[in-house]
Image 1 (cartoon, rainbow, N blue to C red):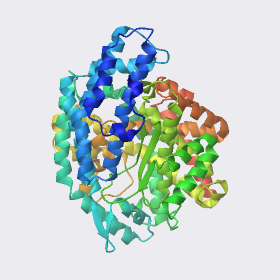
Image 2 (image 1 turned 90 degrees about the horizontal axis):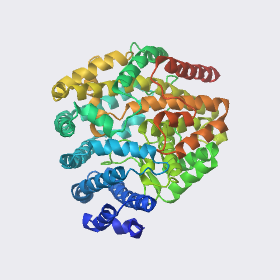
Image 3 (image 1 turned 180 degrees about the vertical axis):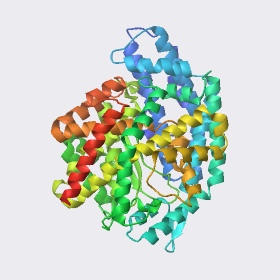
Image 4 (image 1 turned 90 degrees about the vertical axis):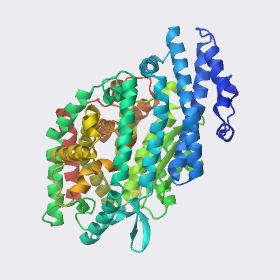
Length: 568
């Protein structure tokens, strides 16, 4: 019956649950056996695809304009009426498949996931999960409304980013302090939203009998291949293997800038007083240059990006009331990814589009899989797809290779990227360690001042080298400005693990670029049909938490930085 769902999203985007219910009931009432199993699974896949795409499309239009009350009304109507019923229907169908004892080919990992999801399901959590999505939207609205007046013009916080690369230190400081002051104006609002979110998370865990929200979230995120203790070991490895290198990078920056101490507004400016890299003037140039790079990496990947440009599956412009950050989502019914970003004319926009392009290519490659449930990719590997693409694309940043820059500027861009990756690992450790503390000490974490203190302690541990004197209120509220902490809890260590995987993919590419891209694409095409270690292995990497692997990769990155700087 599900095959009769209209193909045109314009039709079912207007549906209520009453329109979807006959399809759900049909699947629930069928007598499942080995003869009809494939048709039944296909029917479930089609229904799940439509419901997921409906949610993703509403999420996209809401994040594109967080101030549009009509869009918010439609989004909330979906969350209130359709979302909990869709979750409930999935639970019934999961239990039906698991009870049948049937094991479809290529479904070992999806079945493992379903067992964990079925075990975690509680009807009492349905309204809480809906409320969680609304709290996320409220956070977006607070951040999206943050604007300042800069040089006589209303400017978003994101649009001030280019100023942080201005050689004029006084100007950078003025812009940085203006942004910080505006962000601190929402301190109370975010603290109150945080308390509501934390209480809700506690109820989710309590309803499932979990010891704390971390245990609940671990299972919800389907983390089978590593434990919280592995994460704590990873933090320690970063402290041992990366923090000393990051400190050297900060010391070098301080020395080259000729300043007494490195301040937060000194972290983005070029140390040689060169103007910021300006890869494009209009967004059309960003799209065209990125397309050229993707075609150089691999012809098929380039074709995928051409489809996205042609079908207007990119929203790249920064504007007031647009949600912060960048993401790639996927419309599973129409088999198309969608990229959302906030571009302001910097090289970081190129890196963002390469990154999100990697996610998009993952979606295209995995869309060949037969069932919707086979496309649930562990985020620890999904981020290898994105971070790996940033590095696989690095040989093509120069104009002569299809990209944006003169050769010396392409080298400069790679240096900035590698330095940024090294400096990221300690910051990732702060974010992840903060979340481990929060969700194993929930009563204490209800006090925002305790959260400020925890963040500050972790900052001192992992982030030496920058002088925050007199700026304690900005530093200790850094957790306010990390969207993952508020909207996708515990989703951050993935970036650290994936960065380590991506560097291993890049190391392979330095020896044989073509072979590395072949392995990369093969791994993306596996979707969620293999375990996390197997996906890393298919891409030519190893899932690792140890200081030895980190040291090897950081040594390669630091040597490459030294070589490129010697040439400039």
